[in-house]
Image (tube, rainbow, N blue to C red; front, side, top):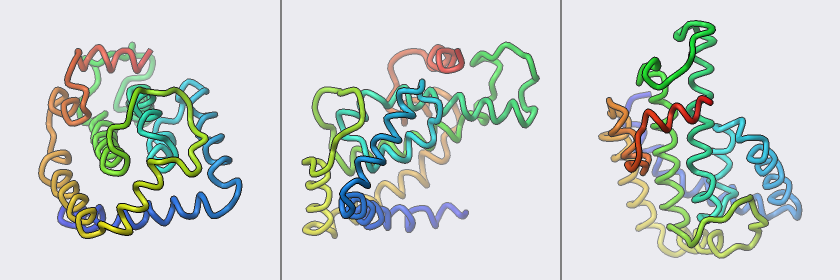
Length: 201
């Protein structure tokens, strides 16, 4: 995919997410069932970071995302490292540490997380105190606010998401070192290597 296509795709996401939120609330149990599936993944040691990351956009409140975001990133990093291990980029049986993992191995996880983290804030704002769990969020204020914002202020929403697409193209996709990647993930405090090592335990 050419980078210039990314902004155009990102600009469409508010409408797609808006439609998904309407669908989740159109069937009486659809949101409840989806929340239960997501919470099951979260309770199972966050063993599927990609599933949690994508579904969190539609299902987690901003407070729930605050609680789960670092656990989700750790799971996502571990998934990409395991995938590299299967592809023999990392020697079988080798003790995995951040120092032995090439940046390019985990860059997709960091880029994906940084993008979704920004989407969370664009959709839901920063929210209040962190909260463990998932839902029930049917009829929650953050959903209503997002839907009303798309309905009533679409031009501004469209511009905001175009700006995000440009940031993704020009900056996030171009990140070339661990520290900068963690800055884009809003995890600038602490040691990135220590964070990665804890993800691999």
